[in-house]
Each structure stands twice: as C-alpha cells, then as structure tokens.
Image 1 (cartoon, protein in one colour):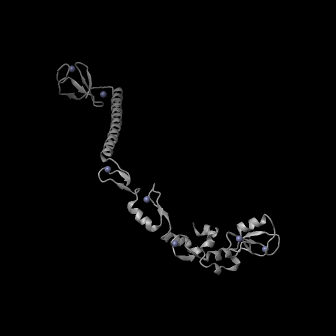
Image 2: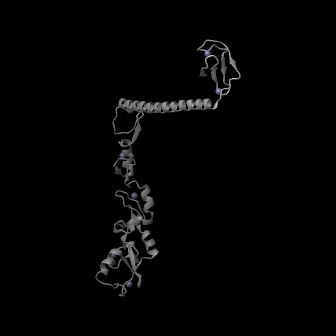
Image 3: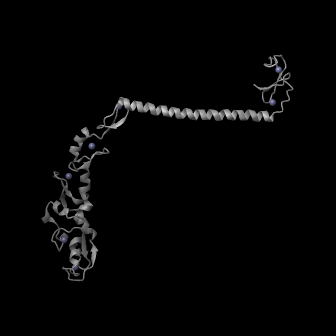
Length: 247
Ligand SMILES: [Zn+2]
Ligand SMILES: [Zn+2]
Ligand SMILES: [Zn+2]
Ligand SMILES: [Zn+2]
Ligand SMILES: [Zn+2]
Ligand SMILES: [Zn+2]
Ligand SMILES: [Zn+2]
C-alpha cells in the first residue's frame, strides 16, 4: 500500500499517532472521524467522507451544516496537504517508525519490516528484509552453472551431467550433418556453374588453332607434335585424330 491509497482508506485512522491532534476542520461532520477521500459542500466548505455523504444523499439532499441544497466539490488541495502532514505509524507490523503520511512511501522503500517477494522467478517466498536475507542463502530458485557440464539450472533441480553431455553431443552431430548437407549443395552448384562456364566458352570459341604446338604425345594416336592448344578456351586438339579435349 502506498500513501495515496492509504489517504483514501479508513486504514489511515488506525495509523494516526495522536488522534487528538487532528485539525478539527478535517473531521467529517457525519461520522465525526478524520475524513477519508474527502468531498466538500460548495456552500459552507465543510468536509465529508465520500462514503458518508453519498450514503446520506440517498435520504436527504441538504447539507447538515448550512442546510442548503448540497453541491459537492472535490476537497481543496490544502485539505490534501493537511492530511499528508498527519503523523502516522508505519503500516508494517513490528516497525516502530513514525513519520508524516507524505514520507511513508520513501520509508517503505527501506523499512526492514516491509515484506517483499523473493526476486528469483518461480519462488513464492515473501517476507521482511531480515528474513529475505536469510532466505537468499537457501532459496532453491537461485540459478547456478554446473561446473562439470555447464548446464544452467535452479539450485533445487537435480540433473545427470552425463545425460546432458550426451544430449549436447547429439545436438552438435545434428548441426554438423546439416552443415555438411549445405556444403554438398553449394559444391554441387559450384560444379554446375563451372561446367556451364566451360560450355559457354566452348560455344563462343571458334578454335582457329593457328598457334601453340604442344610437345606432348597425343593419348590416342601417340604421335608427337600433332597437338594444338586454343589460346582462348584452352581446348587441345590433335590434328591427326581431331580429338578435342579440355585441359
Ligand atoms: Zn465520515
Ligand atoms: Zn454546507
Ligand atoms: Zn516501517
Ligand atoms: Zn526464493
Ligand atoms: Zn552437470
Ligand atoms: Zn577455343
Ligand atoms: Zn592424336
């Protein structure tokens, strides 16, 4: 609960350090206690609790102070200020701190008796700061990394390191298989491109064979000095057997 919601709730009355010190203007004319979520009569400016005046309006439309037909306004900012200055006790059981209502929010941020939730996900533990410190030593929902298999797990979870390692290896094998598949695909495409390129060069080339005698034996006819190499596409032709071969 924060100071705003407390100022609009009857709980506020039970927190007041000294009820006799309350400014008389802040007393509801109907219930005679500190006004809660106050409204004021536009005629005489007297204050009512919202609950009190709405209940009364069901029976009677006139202000019981000025006897005029009532029109309600929100209370003046000064009223809200006066209420925020009321000295109250901390709402937390066990805490003996006292402060102005307006200081409650900042106090609760450091109140040792303020109950907070354990920050570790999945844990339902809720208690004051002191107990939370003790709990943090033993909370089963703190995550840690296993030194053997590097698995990140909650303290209260058991696991079999060997099992985890086997699973990891299987996963890696699967990844390697997939990568190999991709590599084979790429190699195939590269091969096709290469063939295509050679084909295109061959198609373009007219093989004049006017130069570059090669001093090797022809594989087919076994004669020397019968072969010519095409300067453009690298195709080799034996003039004897007219075989075309790509070098
Ligand atoms: Zn009242
Ligand atoms: Zn009035
Ligand atoms: Zn406190
Ligand atoms: Zn916990
Ligand atoms: Zn492990
Ligand atoms: Zn050629
Ligand atoms: Zn030949």
